[in-house]
Image (cartoon, rainbow, N blue to C red; front, side, top):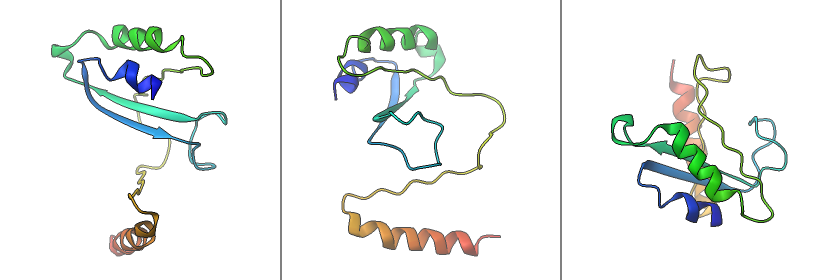
Length: 112
């Protein structure tokens, strides 16, 4: 929440996605001690400061938060190195996850 509070006031952000907790085993390139991740999307480059300056500001605004180390990673360009699709399912109630997963799995198995 502290990191979010220091990032969200930036006017150049189009969307922000926050995930807390550790990642699933074997499905991520994150370090073992990662406790969360915030993915941000900038507004159009013509309407904002350069990305490097915004990222520097985020780093400056979050470096004094005690007990954590914020690492900023830029989007990697080039051809994808992992599987071409990554689907995450979430629901406000965990009982809804299994039916959604089964529906998605059935739909994907029907695809050529």
